[in-house]
Image 1 (cartoon, rainbow, N blue to C red):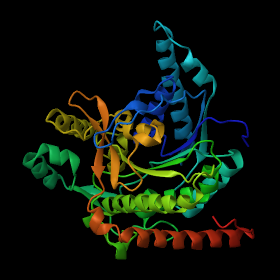
Image 2 (image 1 turned 30 degrees about the vertical axis):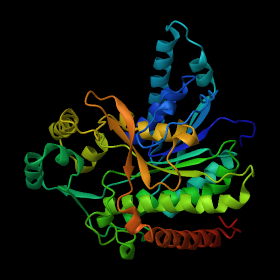
Image 3 (image 1 turned 60 degrees about the vertical axis):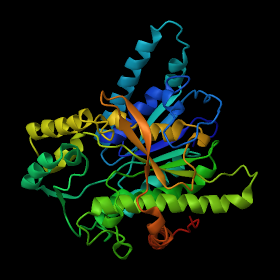
Image 4 (image 1 turned 180 degrees about the vertical axis):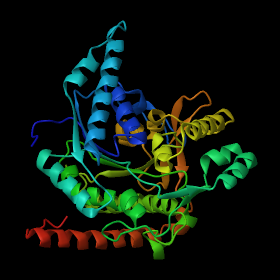
Length: 408
């Protein structure tokens, strides 16, 4: 167990591909600079405050939380290769301060198996983290699934000619399965997108409190997080045609309620060194990854057309299409690196969204949690349901192992 390290220990779920890999790549490149550029971004809608420059970190422990060991190790090697190439380029820059080499020496990239499709997989991951690390500073809840059934090609063609930007932003032609459950009976999309991450947060809560800085939990939302797709009476989205969108809106509600709860519990402890973690909603915009094409089994031509449609939308003026995963990661790296005073207020119902100018340069904007004023009363109800399910599963786990739980 680590005991003397004070550098960040950051967990990224789904880190071996797609946006998760992009987050890891961007994070490493940012922290290899003594003053990470993403930490100084100023999203519109957040007051600009005078803050001291961020203190450079001399290292990082990055935990790749993935299901597939071989893919995780391949991602680890690729990340180190990208970083080493970046450092070589920096060494030839006049005035190079040597920080990248210091950071590289203090960098650890670890793999810990994490299968969020079951509570067992999530709890096993937490047990391993608890044994191996003395604290956790950041948890990036990125992994997720869309339970695709098939593409409605005719609807897709009509949608494209009706509006190419809307076509590339809100793909209603992607048909999802209804009623899919995991091996333990929970809604599959709900378990993978939301509840698996909720288990990670609840179980690792003591490790956040031990961190040398106030912890941060990043919850990945989506532009598709619509309240019309979520029903509190179907809180696991088992009856919904839009389980992905429904679970993403549920994520919005959970993150907002956790922030409210943390703020309320922190109020009596003003001056205490123990700080509850901040919960921050982020979304990557629309990016092109091979995850979708591999799920659908489409050919390379269809993949190219999908990439072209996203790029075309950006050329036509959409700011919501960073396209590249490493650019879609900018909202997450800003949320991790920026001073807390530069982030949205904990009670502000917004999420940090990755955006891009037409030439592809990424930046961060603010997007509202849709219909928060009308839906906010459902947030504590949903959180209570998640708490009850967590407590039931935790008790069952401790009963099976014949151990005594710690109540978290």
